[in-house]
Amino acid sequence: MSDFSRFMKQNQIKEENTKYAATKSLVDENGKPLLWEIRPITTSMNDDIIEECSYDVQIPGKPGMYRTKVNQSKFKARLICASVVYPNLNSVELQNSYGVRSDVELIKEMIPNSGEYNRFIEFINDFNDFTSLQEDVDEAKN
Image (cartoon, rainbow, N blue to C red; front, side, top):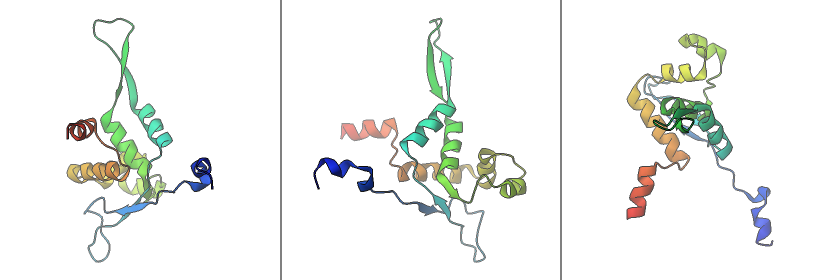
């Protein structure tokens, strides 16, 4: 096999889904937290989420010039929703049981504890090898 042919799609290693107990408030019959199935986020999916959560803000003192900002709260919720395979956050039955009408509203109801919610985001970031700018700066310093 030539070196170039190794770049072909059929040779790409597929990332596997993983399991994560997102909250202690949803448990099985033995009291163990339920495991959620989480999938990796592709570059295209991430770009779509960023686009959906971005908005332009005028730069003060510079008429007609804008800076793009990302609504971080919305981004986190959309990232979780894109990552969760199971339970199906788009299930009408599940949404109705929580009295909500969207996957974003549902995830916030299913994980009402903000600490658990933030740990879930951290897990998804780690699973996808996302790093913060500060982490990159710290690593570069070492």
